[in-house]
Amino acid sequence: MKSNIRDIGDTRIIELGGKITIGSGDVKIRELISQAIEDDKKDILFDLGGVTAIDSSGIGEMVACYTTVTKRGGQLKLMHLSPKINDILQVTQLITVFDVFDDEREALGSF
Amino acid sequence: MNSSAKLQASLVLASRFENIEVAERALVDLCHRACCAEDEEYWLVTALREAVANAVRHGNRRDPERLVRVAYVIDNSTITIRVEDEGDGFDPADIPDPTDPENLLRPSGRGIFYMRQFMNRVDFSPTATGGTVVVMVKDLASNDNDRPGA
Image 1 (cartoon, rainbow over the protein chains, first blue to last red):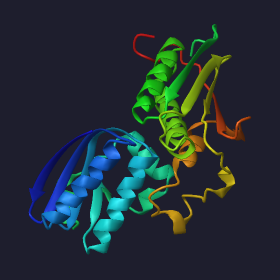
Image 2 (image 1 turned 135 degrees about the horizontal axis):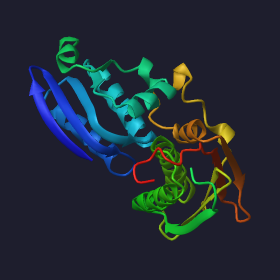
Image 3 (image 1 turned 180 degrees about the horizontal axis):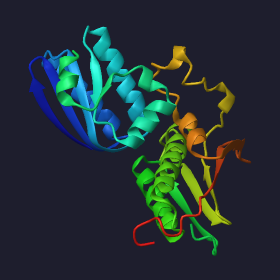
Image 4 (image 1 turned 90 degrees about the vertical axis):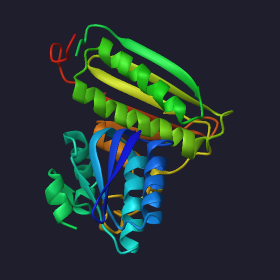
């Protein structure tokens, strides 16, 4: 899994690419959230535009990150979901948990 | 898909997460030979990865000495995938519904749900040695010409 970090104001944008799957990508996003917390970034925007697959471990880790960020008084939101990643969020009902955006400016304005 | 020929493959894998990729590559190869639609292949791979991940993590508890056996058959426009571990068995009825609102924020427990979503049938049974075998079946669409290079 690839990742890139950008900070816009108080929000950390974490761009993810490739597979978020068991044993690699799931661990990586946990580390990225820990790093954001260390850097005192409360609000997180995951850009999933480059993500090709996400398995149940990857989804579970995203849920764990959501809980971690929320408990610290921040927000975790998603943008640029591919149709397949959107399908997965729909069937798991997690679309009701995460705020999802197509437009970065709109996403940043929502925090 | 090309329904004229029976296609099959089998693998015996050590219980390592890296071997999920090996299982995936074998399935993708079969799907290409069967001219499966790309979307169909994507969801088959998704279900397979969950089954193998469960066998490695929950069944064999990541003990590389314990093996995961994977068998694939495509016949009469139906794919059957069988994944067997050498673990201690489990009852799938014990897994709570991950879409229940009280479970939505649980970080685990979605693997079997994934498999059931993307396959037509998913059956678990114990092996003779106490492990678990999961058999997943999906009817494939007729898509002889909808894949680039098919």
